[in-house]
Length: 361
Image 1 (cartoon, rainbow, N blue to C red):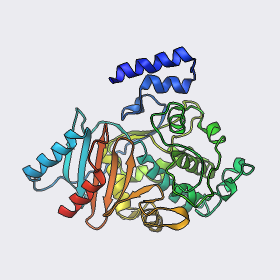
Image 2 (cartoon, one colour):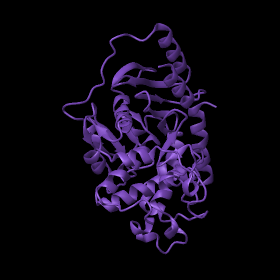
Image 3 (cartoon, one colour):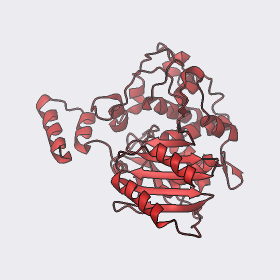
Image 4 (cartoon, rainbow, N blue to C red):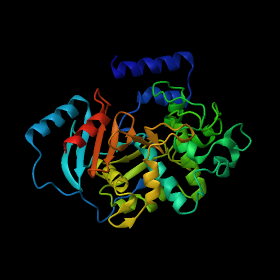
C-alpha cells in the first residue's frame, strides 16, 4: 500500500471512530518514523567545535571490485551513508540517495549507547554511586510502586528490569509510539508497572533507557544535552552541529532511548571513543573500566550474551544500533569503526557483513 494512501486511511479511521488523541493523530500524520524525524520534534543543541577532529584520507584508493561490491549492497538496501575507518583513516566513505557528508540523520536507538555513556560519566563524577543502586534512590516517586524497589540501575542498563512494555513501532497506541510521539514523558513513566521479577529475563524495552536518562538528569541536576556536551560531545571535536530531540519545547526532557541527530563522521567519533577505551587523543573522557564492562558479554542477573549496557555484541565486535538500520560498529582487534546509516534496514544482516569485512581487512 502506498504511504500516502495508508496515511489517508489512518486519518479517516481516526476521524470516523473518534480516536482524536494528539498522539494517534501525530502517528497517523507522520506515517511511521524515518531518518528525517529530527525536523518534527523540538530539540536541544550539541554544537560543533571550532577545531574539529578529522579522519585521515587513505594513501591508496580502495579496489574497484571492493567499491562495486559495497556500493551494490548499500544501494540495494536503502543506505544513505557507509564509512569504514581503520587506524583513524577513512578507507571507505560513500553517500547515497542524495545524502552527503553534511546530511543529518536521526540516530534512533543508537542514542541508547550515548545514554549508557552518560551513566558511566555520572558514576565517574560521583553523581551515581553504583549500578547496583536501586533506581528508587534516584527516582523516589517509584518507592510506593510494587516491584520498583528491586530494580537496579544495572537492570535498566541490560534490559532485565521486568518493567511491562512493548517495542512495536507499528501500533499507534503502543508503548513505543507513546514514547516516540508523546509530549509528556515524565508523567507517562509514572504509569509503568513491573511485570517480571527484576534480573531474571532480558526484554528489550526503550522505556528502560528513558528511565536511565531521568536518573542521570535527576542525579546531575542538569539537562541531558548539556551534560552530554560537557562530558563527552565536545571532547570528540565534532565537525558539525547536532541536536537531541525532546518531548516538548518548554521544560522538555530528552528522548534518551533515541533521537540524537548528527552526521556520519561525528557518529563515527563516538565509536572511536569506545574503540580507545574512553580515551580521546590522550585525554580520558570515560573510565576504561566502564567502557570495557559496557561491551563485555555477561549472563549476570538475566543478561544475554549478545547485549550489555545498551550495546549490542557481535562475534567480532560491538555496536550501537538504531531502528531502520543505523549502526556504529567497533572492532578493537583491528582498530576498525564502521558506520552505516539508512532509510531502511534492508535485507542484509549488517552485523554479519561488518564481521566479514573485518576478517578481510
